[in-house]
Length: 165
Image (cartoon, rainbow, N blue to C red; front, side, top):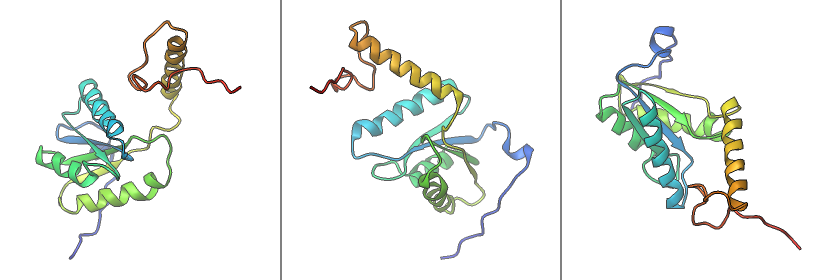
């Protein structure tokens, strides 16, 4: 089995703007809980609906399908000539440094001529403060009886006050 050597392409013209044939793969860890995996599909639908990307696919790094390889193939089948892999992770740990790059490179080997980029994880973005504050306010409103459970907690019984005696 022979593999072509990866070429790193760095120019403003090729990387800094959205192109019509760009695809996005949003990749999470993957879970044994199907409910958790389905939440990624919901996020992908939200992302696609609010951005200019026409080709957006979910992928799970492990434990569930679709895999990064499957998602990469689906992007190419839909006409993508550049794939942007965006980790749905908070911080740049081992999965971002090693596992995801390895899995994406392996998937790309099946599709010569298709370039890809792996973006930074969500990280320390100031909008994450707003997201966390929104979650806190929602949960406090729910336990006060002023709001329904959020979609994440709905039906789990998790959004409640705990007190040890």
